[in-house]
Length: 167
Image (cartoon, rainbow, N blue to C red; front, side, top):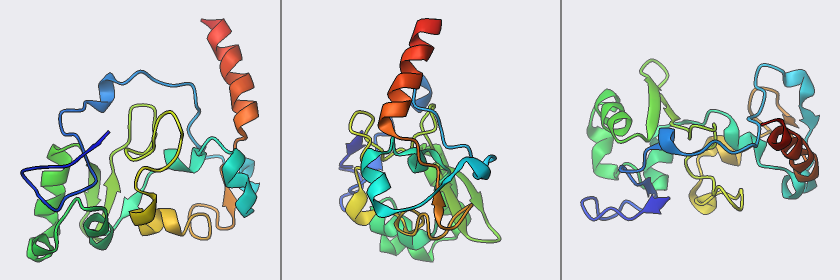
């Protein structure tokens, strides 16, 4: 859920701070296996339309310019120490961690590992036009350049029904 923040008028893509990701029901879509890169497929653009958006379950590392583009940080905050920005964003549940040495923020994910900005039903990015550079450059850059954690929708549905019957 993305809300407009009246306390921060220019901020457009802020997840609702009252939204507790740990309370969300887990869906049955498996997260990308970052530790098993050998299972990834050689990437081609048509794959995206038939995939479950498994790349959107990977950790999203962003820089301050991405946070500004998304609307989470305004340009006036650029002068603030990044550590202070990180503390605020961690408190708001938007950033999971911050690496002070590299200046990289890791966005918080939902309890099922989905990106905060991935629509749960459509599996489409809700901020696609202003998405972070990490997402724009995937899979050219990433854990295994040129490959993606492709999982076809049909295969996942089949696996999901098996999981449902196991309960």
